[in-house]
Amino acid sequence: MIKVGIIGMSAGNAHPYSWSSIINGKYDGEAISRVGYPAVAAYLNANQDTLGMPDARVTHVWTQDMSVSKSIAASSGIEHIAESATDMTGQVDAVILARDDAEFHREMAEPFIEAGIPIFIDKPLVITQADLHWFEEQHEAGKFIMSCSSMRYANECRIVKQELASLGRLELVTAVGKKDWLKYGVHMVEAMFATLNDPPVATVQHLGEKGKDVVHIVFENGLPATIHLFMDISGTFQLTFFGQQAWRMADIKNSYSMFRDNIIEFVRSVQEGKPRLDFYRTKNIIQTVIAAEESRLAGGKIIHLK
Image 1 (cartoon, rainbow, N blue to C red):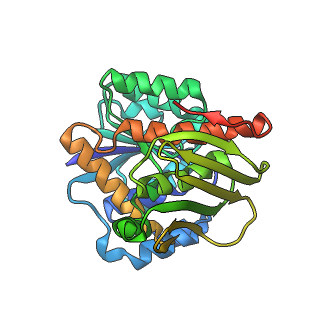
Image 2: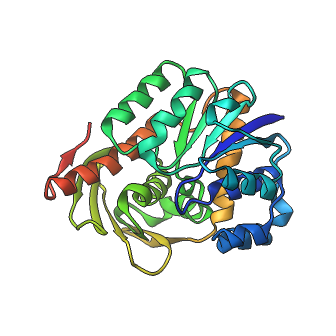
Image 3: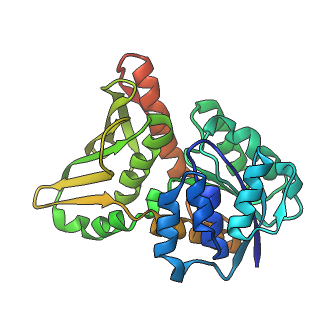
């Protein structure tokens, strides 16, 4: 049994509740709704029959607020509430850093990485080149670091992926989503890149404005793509793949399925002793997210990636 410690929370991110519930197979839907996440309670209610993982259990939780920690622990059946995040060191086999405020990821992950504890870091891994370089150095030193958006495992995208060959030569890929670029752009980038089997990127250019982000990507194979991320747009996350013979759309709605598959991949990785997701796929995605922001700040300059 893999003992997992979970760290949270950041504003608007319910993963400490939902991911702990998915792993432990226990949740309090009314409590989760009361703290502001009725959609999480709804998908846990709808998937009660697949909750719980036989090879892992969240045994420890820490947040910056003891009352929040107690709420998560009570909802998900977590036995131990840590008074500091590092109190988990020596008590757990793996850690999930379930916060999406990437500016704190390096600081919060460093003690566990130094201790050799496998860690999964919620999206986006980082939002600066300096932090990305640090995590790459740790990876090259043999440390266990895994990070991605769960949209990498979205069933809607995997259905399209298995049909890509039937579309003929791809001419264009588009994506539409909502919220801010630095926290949510990674969702669209990850879903798109994973469906295309993570091709390397040649150039990135930001053509929109903050809150109405339009990002143009050209892959090294020449395929162009655009991502439209608007703060106040209605709808879900959608990707469309246009080939010379046919086209397909992925309308991503099943959050529970992709979260569960993501957690399964992390647990399997811990069992196997190394991340099943290649760090350099994550680097390719994070570099693209950072480059788009650099382009916006530079007035739409084309950023060339190596």
